[in-house]
Image 1 (cartoon, rainbow, N blue to C red):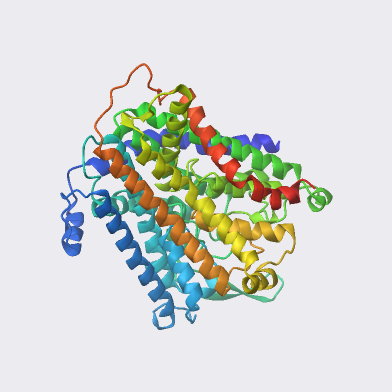
Image 2: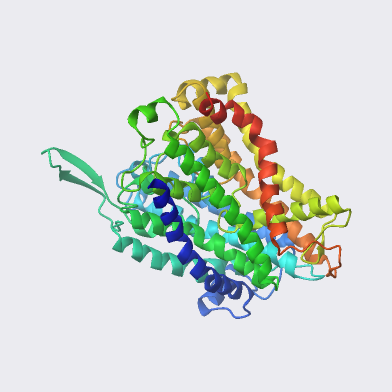
Length: 557
């Protein structure tokens, strides 16, 4: 019965995705290729002093990304530090310096890691003017970088890859805002709250009193999922009934998480002039997604471990209104799209079920990955795949008419090394530095032993991949964890972006290479399987040893 529910839930999400994939993907292709600007867009360009017709080199595009993001970090930090003087602060004081630093980086990098309880730490002004704004623009930055790489593949002998400011404005105003508005209305119909009521004292059924928080939740929930951001308005995130009241709203939120990453594959196909290429990439994503969902569901239904077996099922930390299939579908989607939202507590999962959430991030979150980041991540893996295929048959590797030479493969190789280095070094330093080890072992980790190691490993995996989910048994609001995870999020976001834009610039300069009998067709099942295998192989070779120290050691005893 549980597997029937799992299949039904997957099908319920897949059908509308299949229906929206083509029209929405075509719409986004039009957004980023149209020569016409809206009046409001022209006004914004005048304010910021941008010529929308001026194309940029990859270096100029990168300067735009970094400058805009730096200003975002400073503004979000400032909003938090000035919170007690802002309207609708609800009497809350400013977060500490290290927590404000961590949160500012978290939301600007589209990670939305929260080392605090949102409903008792941040007032409405900070939530709306700082965090919700970044939910829009950080997602728009991710899409812009992906579009720049697609242009690199599509352009011939060009020194430019588009205009960052135009891509940013169009992604925000034409894609994210209208869809988020519709999604917020749907969520309000489903029971998600939207108000400015503050904290309300109510009388319980037992005659006691309780404090019930309010807030503009539906509007933030919509962009949180649509932009694969993930930061919850409440500490319980999407397990909270004010954020996710029913089984159907949970499925709707899953649809929102997948909508843009899945549809971007169609956008990619349209922009390179061959929609079959988009379908090949989507097929690789789908294979990885379904395999991950099946594995996580199987581990949770098996209820491995003494406690779940005695209880008759692994329902600790899961909402009964979602059940195991509804929880694993949501959390597979969340960890494989870099969203980080949860409708059940991952720290309560079985050891191997929790490992699957971790592994989803270790795969690079490319199935389908975060908004924009998933597409440019799997396109880098496609470059790796054609290079491997070229080695196997002894021919110069080519992808979409572009030669994959030494420069391209170096950039792609550095890309796939960035997050593993950050994860492994961050985890190692947390246990290797004497003073830091004491803080981590005695303050941050609530569950000593193998599981405590898994909690720290998960935290750095989440930060480096800009996911934001966590094993909740870890207290991360300490100077070391806030600072180390903040730096990890920053480097995990922007070093890959630097490499992707450099790759886009290198590819854009090339002319077209005519296909020959030795050219690997990149729209057929063989290439799809090769891309999926390359993703798995890279993650397996990189992370298997450290997984053996954590979740595998815990789950196989």
